[in-house]
Amino acid sequence: MAQELDLTHLSGWMRDHVPSFAGNLTAEKFAGGQSNPTFKLTSGDRHYVLRRKPMGTLLASAHAVDREFKVLSALEPTRVPVPRAIALCDDDAVIGSMFYIMEHLEGRIFWDPALPEVSDHHRAAIYDQMNQVMADMHMLNLEEVGLSDYGKPGNYFERQIGRWTKQYRAAETDSIAEMEKLIEWLPNNMPEDDGRVALVHGDYRLDNMIFHPTEPRIIGILDWELSTLGHPLADLAYQLMAWQFPRESGINGLAGLNRSELSIPDDDSYIDLYCERTGQPGIKDWHFYMAFCFFRLASITQGIRKRAQIGTASSPEAAAKAAMVEPLSAMGAAYTD
Image (cartoon, rainbow, N blue to C red):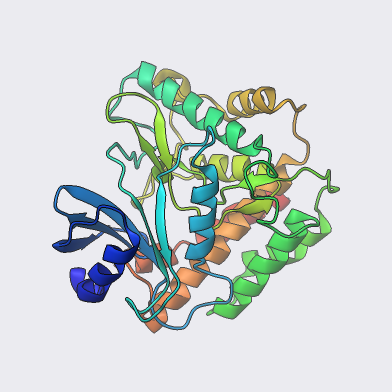
């Protein structure tokens, strides 16, 4: 895997930009991460993580690793746990594309929201922790953390629907009736803009979190590629969207499970706790937020499908993920009825 990185040029750059870099660099590519390729770097007894833009022709505004670096740097002193950002390189001559280096966190990543590997007590605590960290993130003072310019003003959902419709059209390979339905329905059924603006992660889900090796505590939120300033309910709906997936074909959802027996909160309880922590009343138009999240994920997945076809997707799992465009759009369209 290391042959995807020019370790000679990278080592020279790290000597100048990474404190305490010891040389003798090796690299191993992490599995998955079909959007921005991610590598574990080892130098002596130190470990780092490198995330780079993929090679080849990219869709406009995609793969902005410099934005990831900015948000990680801003969040380091806050209550939102993130890996420490170390250095950003915008010189394509070093390894062929922009990249950044951050600290490597030792901990646990869980891939199944049913959390079969932990006790009931820890399972409940993990869900509570995810809820608390999301609330903390959405309650940040954007001016104080230096992120007031991290997104565009105006209606977040209007911008996002426009962006992901454009991205979908740019990557479109086949006509999908449910996607066409969502593209028509979403702009005509947007709730009135309530003016709420927060830092939104954009991909807030269990396997983008590193937990303490033994405690049910998040020590790092990962994959900030899609983060921006926007409406906080987009993150909440996105997380709950993933729980609606069936447990089949390699997909780990929560559909069909008895959550109470597993000490996992139901959707309403999780939403109520989030609202309590963020000081807001109940949520209207929940069906819109869910439809939007399915549409957005289907658009992202269509981009993976396109890149798999032209050979620039960065993981073997890309083809399997590409097959999810139709099921995702169908699940989203169901919320429009």
